Structures are given as C-alpha cells and as structure tokens.
Image (cartoon, rainbow, N blue to C red; front, side):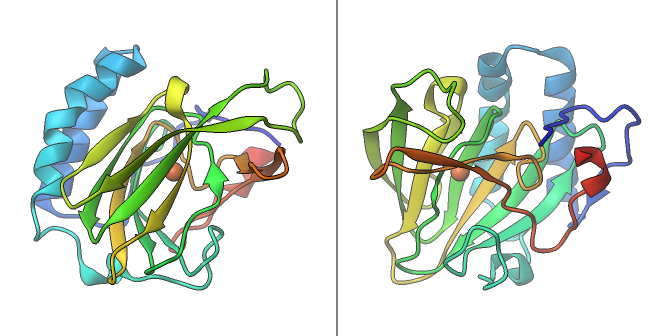
Amino acid sequence: MTNRASPATPRADEWLLDNSQLRGFIGTVNATRARETDVHRIVAAIRPHFVELLSDPDWLPRKFQQPSQESGMGGGIGMWLLYRAGDGGLAFSALVVPPGAQTPVHDHLAWGLVGLYKGEQEEEVFTRRDDGRDESYADLALSVRQMLRPGDFYELLPENDIHRVRTTSADTSVSLHLLGNDNGCIWRHRFEPETDSAQPFRSGWLNVECRDEEDA
Ligand SMILES: [Fe+2]
C-alpha cells in the first residue's frame, strides 16, 4: 500500500469535463499551489474562486450529478472525477449522495475545500484521540456537526481531516471536492467509531481507472 503524491514521471493532466469555468478555476488553483507550500495559505488563496464556482449553476453537466450503485463509497454514492493533475497533487470531483445515504467515516490525507452545490448535507467531523500508530485502531470523538446548504463550504486541513457526510434534503445532494491529492485512488482510511476500528480504504472514481501500476 503506497501513496505516491508525486509520480516519478509526471503524466498529463486529465480533463473529464472541459469548459471555460473549470479551466479558469483549475488554472488559478494550479498557480496557487505552484507558489505556496503552506496548506492553510493555499486554501485561503483558493477560497474566493471556489465560492464563485459554487454559485455558478451552469458549468456542471447533469451526467456528473447522478448517483451510482458502483461506487466504492457504497450507498449509491457517486464519485465523479472532473479533473486531476498529472503530478498527483490535485483532484477535483463531484460527490453525489442520494437522500438519506451517508458516506463511511473517512479521512483524506490532504488539504481540501468542499462545498455544497445542490441539496443539503449534514457533516460530522471527528477528532482522533490516539496516536495513529495502530493501523486497525482509531479512537474518534465527534467534535462538530453542521448543516450545509448550497453555497456553504468547509476546509479540510490536518486538524479536521476525518468526517462523514449525509444527505438531509429530499433530493440528492451534490458537493464539490477539491483535494491536494488523487483522493479517489490513494489508499486512505475508513473508520467505525462505534468499534474504534480503522481499515485501509480506496474509494476509486466512477468514470476513471486508478493508475494501479503506481501502487506497486
Ligand atoms: Fe470526505
């Protein structure tokens, strides 16, 4: 199990969706991460551009707003990749959660910005109380519960990297996820707070294969 943030031979960027709004946003994000290394500064610089994209109703085609039974998240939750950088340092995706469905409790292992595009979600953030040395054990405590409506967003940073989201609206929710890694393909963790357990987890993407040779 290897997480390779920077493949030895950079690949081409992949655009699963290509339009002017997405090109403009990703261009700004890539310029930001090229000049900044501090994750808090990266997220702060991107925030206003993310807000702009969240408020634009026209750029995300309906095919990326569909749930799916084939997702690694389970529960009919769709994870659609929109863009990923060839260097492995950025992925932008849409998470589609049917009414009442929820993700497992999971981590991300990268900085991120997550915002509600459609529907409503509840997010529960967990704090880890153990030192993480035991791969199969995690002592988690619920630290924040918040409701999100379209236009609301939050940051993923090392201090709040573990959460679960659930759709609370009668309609399917769609949230946009900007992550500083290829979060569909890296090995990360899912947790069961009720039993203090942790397992290796790779969610995959619905519309793109993972580059398995990089995990050898
Ligand atoms: Fe997440």
